[in-house]
Amino acid sequence: MTSSRNDELLQRSRAAVWHPCTQMKHLESQPLVAIVRGDGVWLFDADGRPYLDAVSSWWVNLFGHNHPHIRAALHDQLDRIEHVMLAGLTHEPVIELSERLAAWTGLGHAFYASDGASATEIALKMSVHSWRNRGRPDKNGFVSLAHGYHGETVGALGVTDIPLFRDAYGPMLRPSAVVASPDARDAAGGDARAHAESCAQALESWLDMHHAQTAALIVEPLIQCAAGMAMYDPHYLRRARALCDRYEVHLIADEIATGFGRTGERFACDVAGVRPDFICLSKGLTGGTLPLSAVLTTDEVYAAFYDDDGARGFLHSHSYTGNPLACRAALAAMDLLDDDALRRNRATALRLSFAARVLDEHPRLFHARQLGMIWAWDVRTDDPLFARRYHRAALREGVLLRPIGRTLYFMPPYVIDDEAIEHLVRGALIALENTLAEDDAAGARGASLVLA
Ligand SMILES: Cc1ncc(COP(=O)(O)O)c(C=O)c1O
Image (cartoon, rainbow, N blue to C red; front, side, top):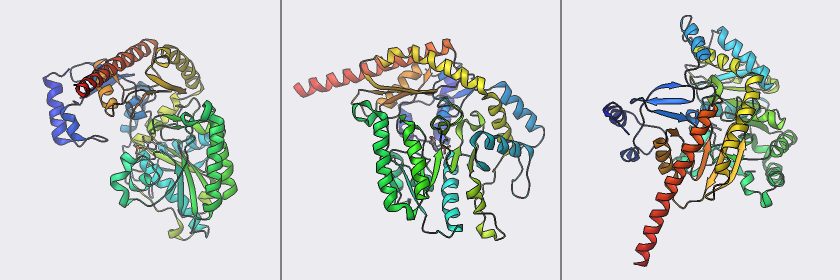
């Protein structure tokens, strides 16, 4: 698969770059792919070989790589001002972006950072500090959902419930409470709504005991993506909203992965008809071009900080807060996400779902599920290395797919066309058959060894 150019880049990368979410030793057997160019849903490696970006480059890309509208906005902004600090100064892109995000979310007072985990940190800090400013310093704890993921900086990891990411850093983390996830896969008799209700009752019991020490409930609305695209009934969100109101606990919606059209509406909270107290945005915010995140909140929270006393102000800053280039990219991406784009997504989702029936019906796949522009299936395999082997097999078919554990999922850019859909489904299926065949052969070899 590699030529000298690709080979050279990956050797240099292995030597010089510490790659994220990667055991570097695995790169001995799992070669990197050196990407030199992108166009729409396609990525091209150093040998010119195309790969369909079926995971939107870690869920960030909405309108394809190298989109002309976003590119033009960035060129225009580069000719004006590339970056300027946001303390004591302001600029048009950040003002306009804040106004437009407020109009879309029904919240306001946008606070910026550069990645999802920082947005989580900001929402957690704002929540605790606002209670403190309101004379309730004991309300400083958090509650989150089992298997939830909110990022990997220390505060965000504290409300993340994925052992792989947490365990090594446990001693650094502040204890935080976890309540049952409404994951529809756990629903008895497949009744997702009833399961959502019973999980809401568990939340209610927990809040009833602990609300006086709790600042906020943080959730990924409708889909816990890193948990393996765990989807749940919107009833849970509505109940959570009502409970947070009753027990005076903030509701933080982490829409870092679900925002900007992924779930069918602009935000997953819109699907449920719920307005949170904080919304965390990143990933698709810039259409997948530049790092940027934002937290928006209510007037009530904002008012708790508005004072002559500097120490009552929100104390958090990053050097690149509100970077003008990133804000222009976000404005351009928002231009593209109009009502027509949401309508087109619904049509695209129907076509992709139709093409993917072959996976729904596959005997080794179960729990087929879809919401908006996300599809997922769980795989019947005992191989703990399934995800890595599948990833490699899919690359051989010209498709970038990275299962999460034993969950295979598609989260393609919204601009995927019929030809690319066909390529995706065919590649995913061949990769599945090949991975499972290796799996079964290994199983059979294991069995004959035991028998021998
Ligand atoms: C729901 C959710 N929150 C937070 C994050 C963290 O974002 P980042 O990787 O930009 O720090 C992610 C990343 O996958 C996410 O899915």
